[in-house]
Amino acid sequence: MNTQNTFSDQLKHLYNTGGMTVKLIFINLLVFLFIGFTSVIGQLMQGESMLFINGFNQNIFTLDTDILGFVLKPWGLFTSIFAHFSFMHLLFNMLMLYFTGKAFELFFNGKKLLYIYLIGGVSGGLFEILAHLIFPIYNLGTHDFTIGASGATAAIFIGLVFHRPSLEVKPFGLFTIPLFYVGFVYLAIELLSLGKTDNTAHFAHIGGALAGVLFIKINSGSSNFMILLKNIFTKKQPKFTVQKGGSARGGVKTDEEYNYEAKQRQVHVDAILDKIAKSGYESLSKAEKEFLFKQSQNGK
Image (cartoon, rainbow, N blue to C red; front, side, top):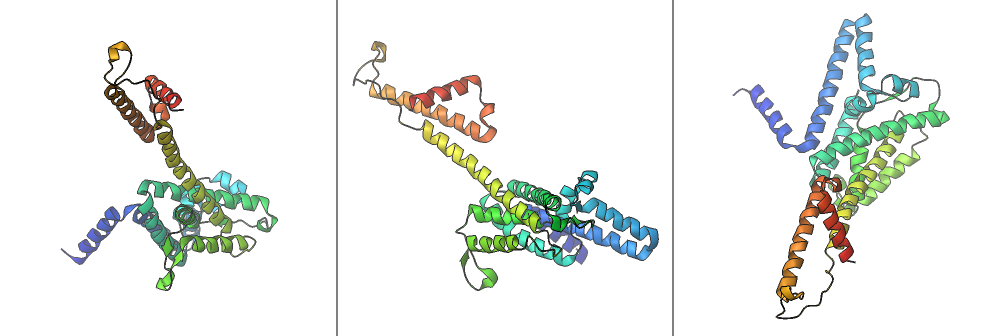
């Protein structure tokens, strides 16, 4: 096997085993290489060819922050969060994505990492558009656009901070500090930089961070909702008059009969709650909904 095949196999293995974090990094890298390769061709061709290629890349991979530009090419809201025009911009964002994404996947899963990446990136883009629409400092009559995964990585990072604030990290291997303080410093710097015209989309970072917090709150809320349901339906069943040695035929249940029926009811309740957790409340049949309602009333 030659070196080229070995390198190719290693890339495939890394892609297949690296989780969603590595897959997202691969996508960003491929888009960067495409932009870079076509830009080189444009520079070699010069003239109209260069103008066409550069215009194509900007139209496809950037998000216009003026409202008219956004309306004319709304796809930039999605394509821009996978694109970078400079290597240092790509490197910084991918390092951020790698460390925060890997940690995020430990607590959640790859699918939720993809969701928070997309939601954070889109939210960041919308915040940047609103900022250019509202604040005069951004309304200088120049054609402006944003690009990069910063809003998406901000969502993952701040979402992780919100989910596990006490998680300890070791910056540069020098000292240990709770993740909360790192997140606080990050947000403080971004908030204090909102008025600067430093070619950094600070509003996109804030928008992504807020989306990350909301995403975690919604997901944690669903878990808390299921815990609440469990607590409601696992309350002690109402007590009936029980007579030892009695007979069910006479209307009085024995201890064994009562305990057996209570256990069967609880098994049924647990099965229904599991169904809600997997498919939602609307997936229940009418009979299951009625049974659940009666048990909630009996448990009060």
